[in-house]
Structures are given as C-alpha cells and as structure tokens.
Amino acid sequence: MNLVDLLLGDENNQTITELSRNFNLDETQTRSAVKELIPALTRGMQKNTSDSPGLDDLLDALQKGNHGNYLDKPSSLGQEATRNDGNDILGHIFGNKQVSRDVASRASERSGISSTILKKMLPIVATLVMGQLSKKVLGGGRQAPANRGQSGGLLTSLIDSDRDGAIWDDLLGMGARAMLR
Image 1 (cartoon, rainbow, N blue to C red):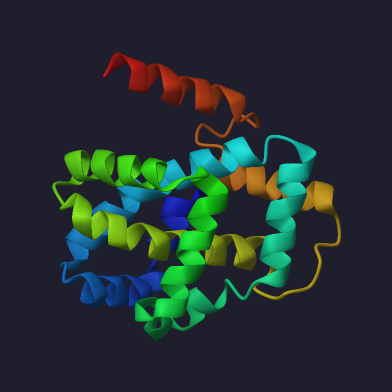
Image 2: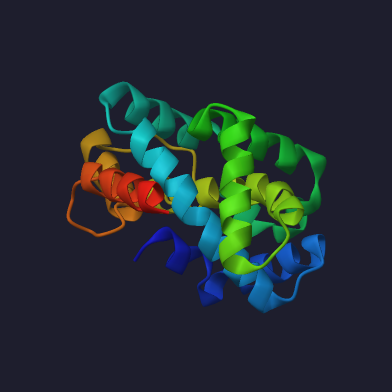
C-alpha cells in the first residue's frame, strides 16, 4: 500500500474532514488535492533518501519528531506550529520555496483547485506524510527502529511508486514525463 492509499484510507477520515474544513474544500476536492500533492513529496523523499546519510536523516527526523500526532489529533492541522513544522519538512524535501510553488502549480492544473490553496495545504500534507511514515516505520512511537536496514526497506516500499524495489527508475520516469510536457 502506498502513502496516498494510507492517508486517504478510512482510518484517516477525520483527518480529511479537518483538512476540508481548514481549506474550505469539500471532501472530494480535499482527496484530489492530497492525491496530487503526495507524489511530489514522495519523489523528493526518494531523492533525499537515495543515499545512506539521507536515509539516516529521515529516520532521525521520524524518531525525534511527534509526527504521528498529526494523524492522531487532526484538530492540530490548523495550528501555526503544524504549518511551521510542515514548512521545515518541505525545506528538507525540496530545498527551496520555488519547488513548493511549482508543485502547487502543477497540482492545481491537474486538480482544478487554486494553486494558492494548494500552496497553503502543501506544508500540512507534508506533516501528514511524515505522520504516516512515523506510524509505519516506528509504530507511531519515538523509539529507534530496531533495524535501520529494515526501516529503510519499509520507507522504500512506501515511496517506490512502481513497487519494483528501486527508486531511480521512478525519478527518471518522472523527469522524462516532465520534459515531455
């Protein structure tokens, strides 16, 4: 199961309802926005975790943060602290704000939702992605993974879009599609 499926699953209905309320969207629009934003986040994570230091940094962030709380307490999604945490996450994933703007613009074209709304939603969705990863990799807790290799494999399986165990082909495919547009 991939991150989109996990985040849009029945166990996160309250989260989707809260996102809808915070961004004045109906549930269908919110689900569409999440479906469009998550792939860019996972591609950024794939790129950042393709080497050992990047994977270690992500595992450390999952261990040190309280990311699982965003899914456990959806009411926190509208708080400034959540937005700030999300912007920090985006900084690590994308490196600069222009990439976030580009992601929101492309997602807007595909979803029909205003890029202004999607720019505001992106940091919140980033916190949800980290929350879901935290729950899957650490069981929602802050304990260190027993086996970093096993945790790395789980992360790869969650962000490997074609489930072939390799992330480079996913990145190359995305790059080729972007060039053909």
